[in-house]
Length: 596
Image 1 (tube, rainbow, N blue to C red):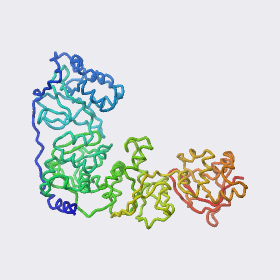
Image 2 (tube, rainbow, N blue to C red):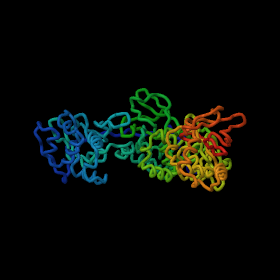
Image 3 (cartoon, one colour):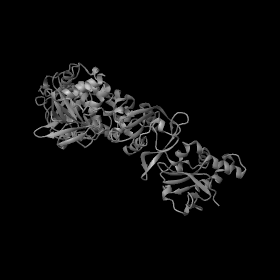
Image 4 (cartoon, rainbow, N blue to C red):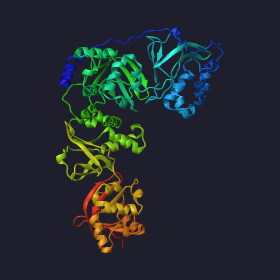
């Protein structure tokens, strides 16, 4: 296979890969001009930046934004600052892109974040600007580090993706450079996009379907190879473009360049560092920072909103082992890109990359995650708390390897826990494999070095004690009773609850004794004291039960527990125990308990 050959070539030439340093040049901004942009008149030095902008007449929206964001006084009084000033036309274009009709559609905090990203806390005249990263007054990074602007002076002057159209407009408290776009605080992906030195890296990220992942909340530290680094790698591999590298190989390489934290150059320390791919690279620090002994960090601390970028002079190539872990399979399959993003956000990639583990993972597709986000009213995974996301993901994992032929109908413990106990998953295999009644295994038995993946068509949420009953056809009568009594919300709450759950057969015996035919023959008032008599406060496993009487949610009545021969609750037998939910535990009984 070409993939195997590429990896073998990578390993053999790894130590030969070298590239040139980034070129840093000076460019005089005073040469910039734009015939369509009305230049600002020269101003007496007693006029502040706000005064100069107001008299120009082309910066009304900028001034309105500064006023709304509470920054107008700052821009008038703060000394020795540089402002990259977008025109009214630039703001109009931004509002159109955002689908906003005016600044009224943007809150003050958002405007403050955008505007402070246009301000440098020093005097940056045209004769001292050079290509590279410049810190702004926006400290909206994961660790409150100043976000970076990318300056390019090779062919005209650009700030990120905006052109400087007029430079060095002087004011009493600083200098203004006029730009033709509003600058938005960038993600690590945006940083790469804004620099021509990273066009190969950007193409690789797009091809590997990692744009959305690396644009998420993070935080990330990206060691970014330049175009020259990629060119040197291509030459060593005797290929001409990324088209000759498989997506699986590319995803493995790119995720080897990313660390799941915001690590500035001052925070780097010598030793092994684990990338989000699950593999490790070595950092050494002497007079310079080196990765894996031969790759030099040539520029540092380009700060984005979701992480920081350090530039390196060669492509990091992971050790090419015959690795086929669950993580490898997920990263290589574009249908699991949101699952991979979720695993990264929850810091669980390493868990499914551990080749010494034995796991069964029920893996939701991108469509399954999209449906979940829609149901939750969420726009992205960033809207789901990490703790919640972690519980959801762990609920898709069984801590042993189970091929489809090993599965049988019944309850299986997952790695999600409640009160220290593994939350149960209900599997049925009578007509295909289903999880919790309505989630179908669509592609079973994708074998991995550390277990097996079964693809599922829905994201499976850890169940409440009510969901446990809903998801099992043996409890349809109990569910109807709970609904009729209006107890669904109460038993779906935080709990914890211990529920003794009668089966359909148990209810059928009760109906026969009462000479009725169905649950509809009982009123809600009759059902409520019966149902609450089946619920005890707390998460009590069968091993924690003790003989005697126990109070129930029916405040007037207690149940009797007998452990002399099995487990009996009053005159009913516990026929299945310890079905753990996310808010309590269910024990199945063969008779309906009637309070007397």
